Amino acid sequence: MQYHPWRRLRELVHVTLHWHDDGPAGWCRHSTQDVSIRRGMTQAERRSTVTHEVVHLERGPAVRGFSEREEREVDKEAARRLLPDIREVGEALAWASCVDEAADELWVDRGTLRARLEHLHPAERAYLRRRLADDDVHQEETA
Image (cartoon, rainbow, N blue to C red; front, side, top):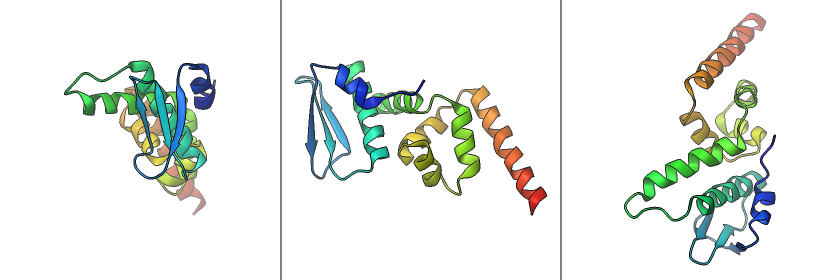
């Protein structure tokens, strides 16, 4: 089942969406339940950013002194929501010529794809190794 970040944000009826120029891709303010997204991003960047900010809202404010750890956890969860099927990730990586192209194919930004790849379960890592090795063998056979 595909995750729909805009639908999830709409379900959070107490949250107000704003748009800003310049600055970070997005931010959320827990005290006022506001989320702001930077104008001018691609659809994949907006989708990734909205998911990231929704996860922040759901988790609540970070404990003082743990903001870097909180960002890593939010990145990890947002990436899993947007890229739950490792087979789709494997197909995009096998097809694409670079990470940016794979991210575009998966409809996420590069940072989200990288976060997903950095936090693989051992079984997912093994699957990707096999899948990408199979693709290398196929390319050698056709060359």
